[in-house]
Image (cartoon, rainbow, N blue to C red):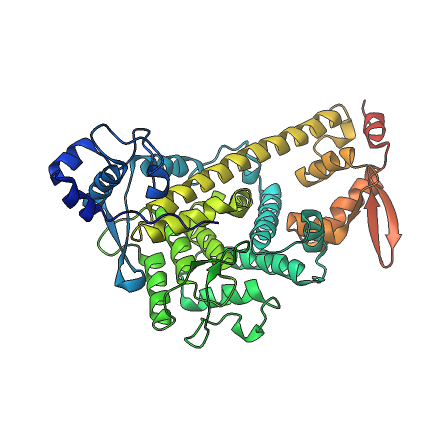
Amino acid sequence: MKIPVKPPDYQEVIQKSGKNYTQYLENIGPTDTKGRYLHWDRLRHLTPPEGFTSEQWWAGMKLNRIFNFKDLDFKCKNDSKCVFYLTDEIQEQLHWLDKNAAGTITSSMPVTNTSMRKAYMIKSLIREAISSSQMEGATTTRKVAKDMIRQGRTPKDKSEQMIFNNYHAMQFIIEFKNEELTPGIILELHKILTEKTLDNENKAGVFRIEEDKDIHVVDETTVKILHTPPDAKGLEARMQKVCDFANNGQSGNFIHPVLKAIILHFMLAYEHPFVDGNGRTARALFYWAMINEGYWLAEFISISQVIKRAPVKYGKAFLYTETDDNDLTYFILYQLEIIKKAISELHEYLSEKMEGIKSAQDLLYGAKKLRNKLNIRQVSLLKHALSHPNFIYSINEYQNSYGIAYETARKDLMQMSDVFSFLKKLKDGRTFVFISPSDLKERIESQKE
């Protein structure tokens, strides 16, 4: 990843241009003609407005932005303040999120069904745990990782351990979603995320200190330093400020809850308060902030799954901010796009799942003794079994997949085998396993009137 070209000094450009400030403000806005909030690294390749050079176009944009910046309670390196611009695009995206990530969701959506809500949440936690860990170097395949979590088995290597940790960290977030954020919660979150994965295990759940040298964000391909975090001196006080911001918002000014969650994500990553595991902790903290503010649909999305498809854009969003005087607008716009994509994909995923369940329910139509006998978990399993002949289901995996008690899981599966003959039951040690028969569709048809 290349470090973006640092923008020219806007004041110096204006002074050399012979044009006054009014000429810049009247002819140039904070965005380009398409409404895009661009960094100099991209703007320099575009055609400037008539009568202005590329550097002067940038200077006018920067001047316009400065007059409308909102200051944050955070300071970056060199004691410079962090700022952002509340663009029309940001306000439009926030409005969309208010309608689609909080409040009332239509009753037809599967996550409103109490029997399935926890199952979808667990699937989301697994997706986020896998994707977030893979972004940090985990190499375990999705299938192996899913099986590990659902079977509840011990991780076999560091990659599996990272995913295992991330899954439990997401559970920890949901458990503490209604609490105020404290440095202690951040430390515990990091400890869960990094257990048995650090070179020095004593650094799990501990802020870095001045003796922790050479802490950088490095491009893995070029080994080039992309970001050096602020000095460890005063880190604990700065992390307390992060917590104060999470709990109370911006002093003296309202800040939208989603913006607050995004800014927390950025500040944790920027501060890099740990020797390792900062990215995972930052993304986890974002989830806590979203859910804490009532955006409950965030429990069912995976931002890392979207970020992982184009990780360079994620890195550039940070670098654009740092190379342009701590202007967080770039990161905010990027993150809003990611959240929107994740929510849109969730809606598509749930629609597909509902179609599959409906197909299974339609297949059951006409079987009198089945009518209202199978719960939605069993119908969901039936839908899976129809397309996966000879698949083996265990009580523990079924329990972990749906977040239910062992006895409830056992009862569901025993009923599917002993009462309806939809699964074959086999003894496996001291318990049973259940197999989807290759003639499942015929078995269902035979029970119809």
